[in-house]
Length: 57
Image 1 (cartoon, rainbow, N blue to C red):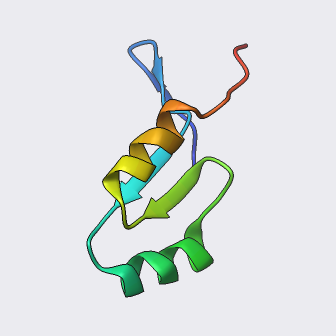
Image 2: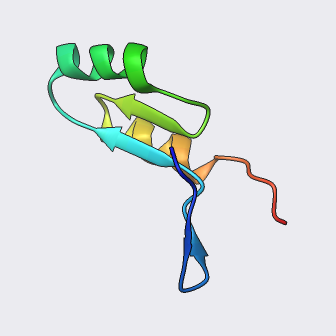
């Protein structure tokens, strides 16, 4: 994932949520990173993104 700053806003993480478990399992195994994860449960996605730790420069 490329981190960019636009208008003073910086993306520090991405939480994807979708009802297709097969798709989310595949994406999680192939594409997830420390800052990006794939979830079946939207509540779990929200919990993860809201608790994501980051370093401010």
